[in-house]
Image (cartoon, rainbow, N blue to C red; front, side):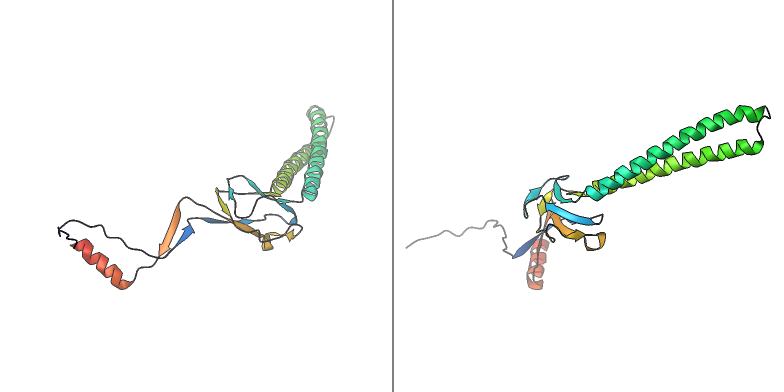
Length: 192
């Protein structure tokens, strides 16, 4: 016969619940420009780092836009140089009344138009470079990737652009439910 001595002591309360883990942040990876998807670079379900390349779109049309905008900017800079030279020649002659005020105003207007065209070209070149950079789709956060929602060769646009999801692992939420009876019992035990 086994004999046990009963003694009073604190016993930890343990409970077992069915729970589901959830990422604290699930980031939808989407295309920002329209074009064809060349390839998926990551492995579905793998852990990725922030900045890691996930997808690569066809860059050729976007590189052509960058080249065209660069050429337009060079053309406008050349026009600005000519307009500046004309204005520099016109100012002293207008001061000596060798040319009319209208000639000076025309030269000044042409210079200002050329300067504005250069600024516009710079902005268009930056936009083209930005669109080119959007063809390389990177993960914005560290996390685990989901399945690829589109196949290689698919035409992407910002409207149908859901490519995958990256779920952050730290911190992680654990969701579980507790019945009302259990919750009341826990509250009563905490009060005592």
